[in-house]
View 1: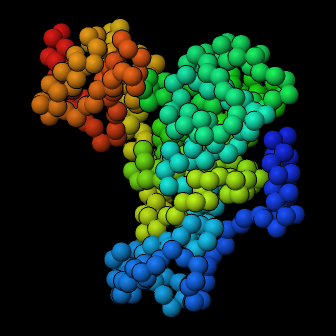
View 2 (view 1 turned 135 degrees about the horizontal axis):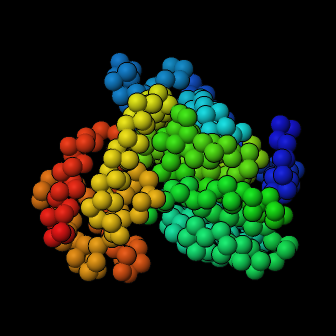
View 3 (view 1 turned 90 degrees about the horizontal axis):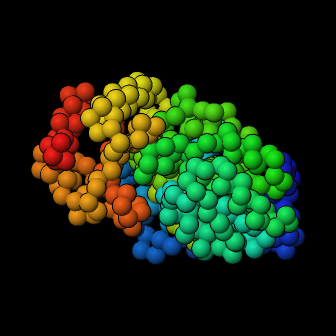
Length: 390
């Protein structure tokens, strides 16, 4: 615990709880198991994680440790499922996202569940954007904090909600850097200023849709704006621009140690397999060096954005990013009909229906990619016009 130094009020409070556990000899910490020891700890009841011949390890990305080779983690990371490759990757992620520490979890959903069910306590209030992802809402429900929502990206409404919180309460403002249903960015600069103006107020940002895309090398919007020192915690997911799976929480050393000790989602979940970590490490390296792909994505964003605005006017939001949408009048039924017409024309577009979005705001979500060609975008526009009878 000597290496944990609080950097703000919330860290001081978390450190007190960690010190209590340490004094009671109940503090959890991650360690790498010596696989040469006789195993009486793992959950590998049938020994199947060791059933591969070592000659197969290169093909399947099996983890080698001592005289043994494993393709499964065999338990939670606090028991037998931790190994040096996970910790090396976590160190690289923390460094890349300009944070003290990172913690890998099985998914972005699990990361949000862990963070929001563990960090806010009964003396806390979470104020969240009304369009915040379901994983954060579910995490709040699992915890014991109070919660309020504010109108989407409305800083003035956020200020009003802040005034409703008891001065003694800690406040966590929860937002996404980019909202996938509307394709718009959170006003993070304004929210950082609000946190500076209000004592015991901390910003948490879900970077699911900006991880790998924004920032100089894909570090996300927070780093891209130079706000990493003013955002208390971030969640990065690997199922979007990484093209992989999993998620991570990045924040202070104290925060990550607190999650390790108090998050049920982390404590009681089997660790990732060696193969999945090797795959994720490969995806991480490719993502960092995908400068050309990022440039092409933004070229496509501008090209598609201009065409959508010219052809569909009030049905699209010109402020949206590389996730575009077209409002479909006529409810769920009409939205599904348009989507099916496009699918038959060879265009894979999914309808976003109520109650996922508010009734009357059903839409088609169009996710642009670096590999889409101008010809494909032109075809999309033409088929959209046909499907909408324009």
